Length: 105
Image (cartoon, rainbow, N blue to C red; front, side, top):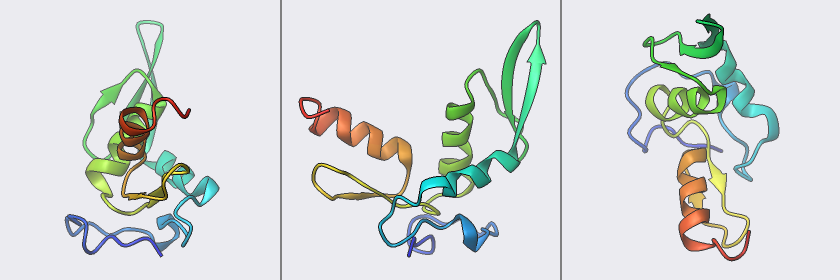
């Protein structure tokens, strides 16, 4: 079960359905983050806005990472496919793989 009580949980209510499974990589669990993202069209370009704080980004994936790491820290757990180390955010896993296992991927 994903743990959010011990990873800097800031007291915001988290939907238990957002918590990743025991394997840490529950396929579509991040899809629930989309409910906190609003797509905007600004000067002919798509932008994505966090509805919780108003932060705007040009890429939806970056906005999803923002919502996950800032508003729901620790709600998801990701396992490294190379060494099994666990991470509480997709971006943390990405950084780990690119720094530690860069020759493997």
